Image (cartoon, rainbow, N blue to C red; front, side, top):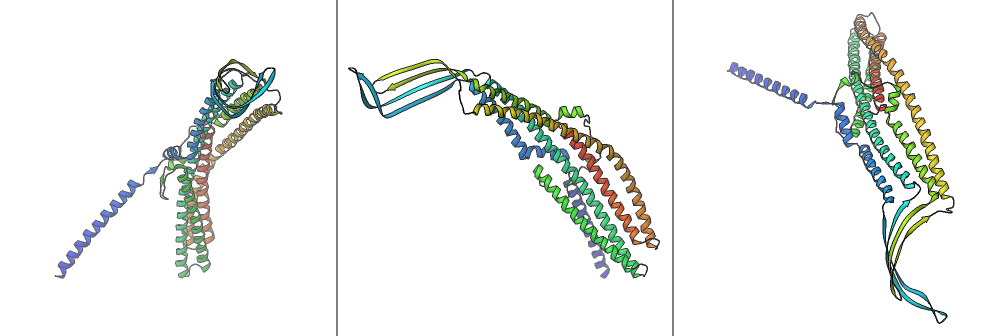
Length: 431
């Protein structure tokens, strides 16, 4: 009887184990399906679609188109309707050699058409300037998108580095915990002193603190990526680690960079736009010539119609210095635009030189740190083995562990700097 119960229990346990194994496998399969890699391109596409600055840039480009229509409207006929009612007006009438006055009400209604004939190229220059500003708005829109791409690339690369740094710090913590427990065991056997135990315990706490700070920084970076893309991300997202290793195709030539740079193009267009506005402001002093047509109906003491057809020339004689100030202001704006263009150009040249200097140094630094990491891994193994048999001190063991962590983090930083330099070159090239 007992054997039957034992066999039944054993059989039930076997079925339960298999069921649990199946559930675990299904859970792992579900996790693997859900752990879809979030690619860099997907992040960029989401940012370009959702980020407010991109939408604002698109609206400003549309707004610039309306400015052209606004300036062109000055060349179209301007039609206006006027009406007037006088509750009381005094009319003067000659009668028998004398003037007599009569008080009466009256009203009039009329329509006027005014057509600009010539304004000494004021409107023409303003239309050209508006067209130039439309091109500037388009370039600014492109630059906004390029800058957003750059920001997404930078935070994506930073997340990759921070994630690997987290793994390195977790390994560092596990190694120090193992050393701490080992020191406790050796102390219990009388092979190590209490100083060994205390020092390894302190190193564990230090590693825990550094790991907590690294996790906080990682969460902050995720929050930044969420703000840029509009996505809701978890801390265990899977990223494309190949981004830090891949070779980037981007022009490193300075002349090509200056010709492709969107900020430079914007500054050059701005010079042209302000120069055209300066010409328009300068010619305001010559006034304008307009064609004028008007028809009115007047009802007072009698009813009659009036018509007017003619050409009007308006010449400002004195405006209190307003026109002169406007012309000078527009001229100064042109000078400012020229200096701003030169400033942008110098800034780009400086940035290019710094990036080239970084790229020349980074490759050799990456290779050196990879070699150091391999050597320090072997050194750690050797020192840990020697420590167990009393041939080295805890100081040397901890120094080796700290040196490995320092080199590992330095390697990750170098990989990030290389990617950041390439990303900056891409942005400066208008990509």
